[in-house]
Every structure is written in structure tokens, then in C-alpha cells.
Length: 408
Image (cartoon, rainbow, N blue to C red):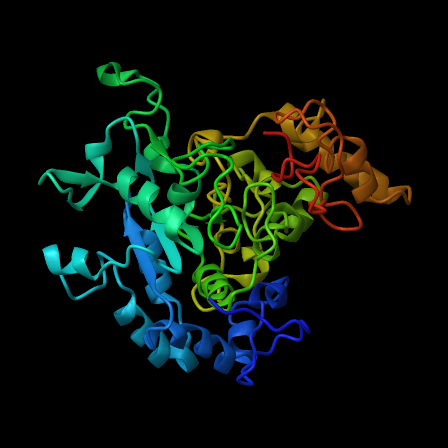
């Protein structure tokens, strides 16, 4: 795989510009980077169409929702090249024309980019299989991942299931059939919930020297996939957070950028989804969830969950689903507001504004914006989403911020 020149100006010897599109994506609306850099993004995907680079897309325990999300992403200026890209992916069980043995034969055994969608069952491997092994038995997904990942230049986990285990890894609370906490042993590619290892060891790195790049979401936003693939196809290294998610997409805290934030500041809370008011008391996980979809929006930049009265359910975060379920009930009060209830925190903001201190300062004093009260990851104090923006990893390892806003 080729990379940028030694001068670092983003150009190659043949004169084509090669950009790290993730660096351009921070804080911009859906489609903005795509519209402004259509030719360059198209050139990245044409490397696959021309046969210069190979992509394999595996699906494990999955509803195929992430593939559907990507297919429904609207990029009129790239429609042709993306259509050809999909046809030239050496293996994708949902969209490729081949089936059976011809499909398996078409799969590259050393792809430039390995994309994994869906969780991988390790305790009951036969719960997800692809093709057949040499002895004629069904070949488990876990075997494919362990064989192809070390041969790949980049490994990208698409969606929450592939990143962290997702809903197939939900806790078996009734201990059904004596199968343990996670019925099939579903894991993400390199994480199981918030902790490594997943299918691959914690020290795994691909040919490019990167861990698995996690594009969380249930489903994933199509922009996340398009711009991440365009970046790595150009040979650029994305900057990742502590959960190996690209920072430009997963730094903003949903709560800080919510269109309903004013209601929270005034202590006005909805009694049920769809009512006027902040949705925290009806289960909103916005204070614990990091993603930029409040500004990027969905459905070609038209809307997002909170804009239509639905609380954030935390689908971008590790340990979704159990961590935020049941989705219609208020999260633990002590986690976000310290010793205060949601109502008290909101009214404290009003009182502070009245005496000139400002709601933001009081929210920090009552626990908002700090994980210094015994955060679940045990990583000390750190400001999250303060006046200078969210805490970030400086590249020297995990920060004190657990990457989730609050402490839940």
C-alpha cells in the first residue's frame, strides 16, 4: 500500500492528492467533506476498483443493519465509483453476486482492508460460520478473523457488534440453558465490552501498525465508514481514542451538543418520550455517549434521534446494550449528578444564572463534567466537556477521561 510522500504534503508521485479525510471531518455536517473532496475520495475507492487494493467484508452475528446503513448513505457525486467499489470487494456476503464456493474462492487471503461486521461467537463458534473448512465442516467466523486479520494492512470493525460485542453479547440474566453470562461468547474483534481482548489479543496490530479501528454505532453512520475507508485506502493512519474509535467522530459528547440542552439548563424534564423537555429522566444516555451525530445528523443530514423526541440509547458506546437498558428509565442519579437529582441539578443551573455565576459552572460543581467521583474505569480525575471542550488522548496512552462523559 502506498502512502504520502516524505514531504508530508498529502500528494503522491503521480500528482494525485492523498488526504487523511478524518482530519477534515471533525465538527462538520454530513456530506460536507464528501462534497468538498469528491474527486479525492473517489480516487481512494478507485484503487479497489482498479484491482490495486483488496477489501474483504465479513459478517458474523449481525442483522446486516450496518451494511444497509452504508448502502443507504446518499452521495450522489460518488454514486458511480461507490457502486463499482461494492462490486469489486473480493468478499461481501450481502452484496456480492457470487455464492457458495465461487464466493469463497474470490476472497483475498491477504486483504489490504479487512472489514468485520457483527460480533464473533467464541464459546459457540458454530453460531456464525462462513463457507467450509478443509475437512468439509462449516468454518467458524472466529477462524476467519484470526486467519485474515494478521495478513491485513488495516482491520476495521463496523458497528457496535463488531467493535464491542453489541446486542449479541447482551447478558444472559436468566442464566438460560446454563450457558453463562454471554450465551454464545459474542465478542468484538479486539474488545469485549469496554475491555480487551476480543477475538484478537490486546496487543494485536495490523500490517500498518494499528489496532482494530472501531466504528461503533447501531447502526454505524455511513459517513464514518466512507471517510474512514477513504483515509486508510490512501495509506493514512487515523487518530484513535482509548476505544480505538476515530477521534473526529467520537470526541463530542452528545449532551453538550444536544438541541434539547436548554431544557436541561432550565431544569425542565420530559415525562415521556416526545414531550417537551430534556429527556434525561426517560432514559437519555447523552451524558455518557460520545459521537458527532448531533451536528452530522442522519438521513442525508436531516435529523437525529433527539430531534424527534427519542432519547439517546448509547449505541455508540461499549457495553451497549446492557449498560443503558432499560432504555426508557432514568439512569443512576449518582453517576451523572453526584449527590443531586436531575431536577436539583437543573434548578441549581437556574439559580446560578440568576446570581451571575452561570449554569455551566454550577453543573461542574455538582458533578457534571467530572469523572473524579470514582469512575468505573478507575482512572482518576479529568474534565470532560468543560469550557475548553472534551478531554482527549494526547497519544501517550489512555487519558483519565473514560471516553464516556459521565461515570456510568
